[in-house]
Image (cartoon, rainbow, N blue to C red):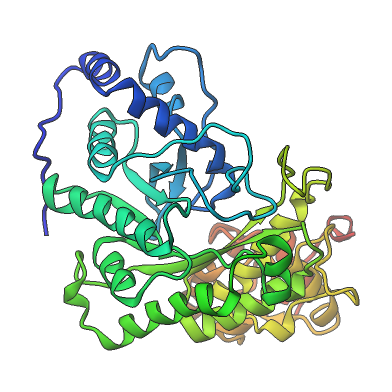
Length: 413
């Protein structure tokens, strides 16, 4: 299916920038800018951080910086500048960690579906963004908030024939028909669980229901994917789904987070879990708490990818007695030191799953090894290095035709 914009793009980039800056109403411009306050707290295919904001846009890079734009990594390796914005930052809920919680003295912004959709198209034409992540505060109830998100996506897809990537939030307590329509319009949908269980969620957001408002929509998403024909979606395939957790505010353990993640993958086929490090926000009940260690977030992501891409079982993850991952060491390396130190893997006979357990070897390089073995026995570690394998990580845990290759023990201390 091909798409073309109704509004034709400008020819000269400098003219595009000048036209964009002076023709988008300043109130819309400022509204989108205000939503940047929430950008760091919403995981959305990010591989970087939002740009800083200069005082005045003089060129395309600076123009991008006026908006909450992040570099996003999509399935298949594509990287795009993704606009992360909200339909409204007005919210009737009082989540203890949130900068837009009800009653907090902070500037608010609300955009109509028409003005937001028009602004997204203009920003796309100017090269500022090539996709949209759209969330919202809960103003006027969950159903109304979801309706406005859907209306914006419908205007983009149907009026402007917008063919770029859309990640659409599902609001807590959304109805099944709303979930279905959102899935018809989006490339990805998500709903934030925030806590790994009901106890944690109650400490983070006391007026949200873990099962009724958050897990139920995830179940709806999976029910629709499994029961409805994919040609009903805009790309003739149903969107992927994901969730997000707040890490480090209420005493949840890594075991709690990853156990829930493993269950979500098994029961609801989520593609991704995001782990958002807690950072205290002034004038919230959590303003005096310490920020979470960024290495904890990093280890959680490493463990998640072991579950998703490296065929690890949840029971194989190396938790400490406290239920947390080791901050100092990669969980895959720690597992290998416990299990492969005295039982190295023979590269020439190991199956795909065994190869994935070796530090320095990933899904692509494991397949290269299997292919190379059809031509003969691998005896030289330089052959592995030529495949893109990190041999300084792998050498300690492998055999090449029955022999251990040399390795530097200091690298594994």
